[in-house]
Image 1 (cartoon, rainbow, N blue to C red):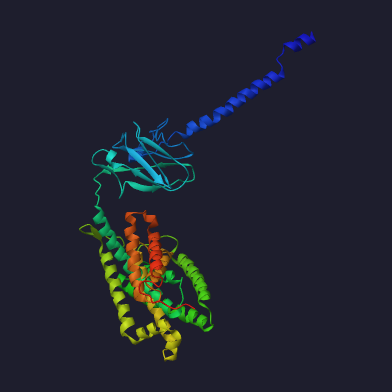
Image 2 (image 1 turned 90 degrees about the vertical axis):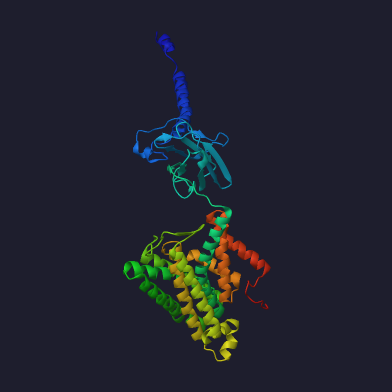
Length: 461
């Protein structure tokens, strides 16, 4: 009896086999469920405020995507509607990092685009596929998009009534040329000061970037924190700029020159000084961007050219300062002594020129020019930031080298070329790469004329 009862019970191995099969099916179903869940767009993915105002708007199922694009773990998605109605057939494109893809919105206004990796891309809405009289709000139908902490990003695209005004290539080129001249003129103030320092001391001063930032910081403190009128703040800024140059030479560079330090050692010291001053500025004004009074005024339209009164004032101030430097170098005794020291400091000292005194005046003049450039740069950006001068440093050295290292007027010419190249290049390359165009111009010029445009050939060895 005992043996027959045992034979009728199912074997434990059968129970284990059934359990293993059920577990395997659950494991296989898991990724599919997860993938289906990943396809569901969130509730507040919208192109208009309607998406946020209607929390019950949930879309389930797959959205329109590019069938020719491979499915990856990374995608952008969204929903486009206008006046609470989804728009079907709107073309959405994604480009960047050597990849491009496009799709159309489905009947519910949804779209999705897969990309090969997490990076920054340019998202463009083809406005010709929108209803007549409807555009994407903002200056352009294209803007940069990037991922957050996850592998998916849902983009809000807001539409509005309007008409996109486009310019011809000639109008765009003219506008870029004017903007380039404006930028080149303010860049020339800093470049001429750095060129004067290099010509008299052979020092490539990396701290010149902080001398530019110093001008913006002092103008901010005097005008915004102290509440002084702008003209008084600018006067204080000029005095503070000249004082910084005088103090740097008296307290640091002259003692180091007397100790006989070489140019490489002095350059390394200037890098350390640059870092120290930069983070001192961050401690004083913080890490954000602060605006000077009257920043971002309404521009005036002069044909295709858009200029504000600050732009015009900046160009006038830069031209007057440049003419003042030219007069100083060619018509005054100190200016002629500066040129003599730049040509041959030993011969200048032997002829009775007080080299240290002239160098001190050059540092003060360079500090003044850098401070004025800092104020103009703060209005051009716009805003004062603790590291704003560093953004100009490479361009300053490029302009100096392009025009000729030993001549301030060469730095002026180099600055104009760099400024125009930087602004005009955005017609063909992304704006993020516009500063690289200055390097291309520099390399081309130096291959043809190594001493720079206004520099003189020198014997080596």
